[in-house]
Length: 68
Image (cartoon, rainbow, N blue to C red; front, side, top):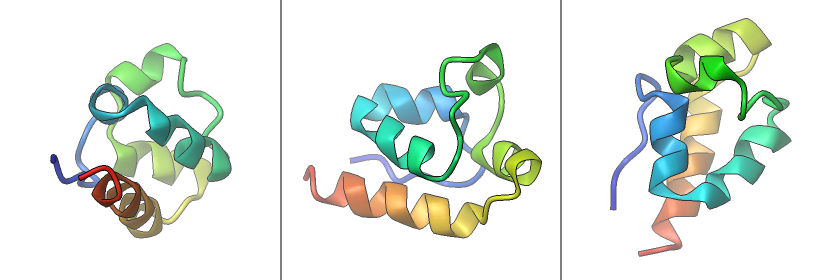
């Protein structure tokens, strides 16, 4: 299974597992479908939204680990 990093593009994470959408949404990132998500890194999006990227990445990886 892929490991998510803060440098990954949001759309690439969504391609790994669409179930990650709920995690992004729970962090207030409701723009999952916007064009920016296809070219914006998690770190960049977190900076814009005032979200801790380490916490988000940890939750994404914890979720993906349950899928293994």
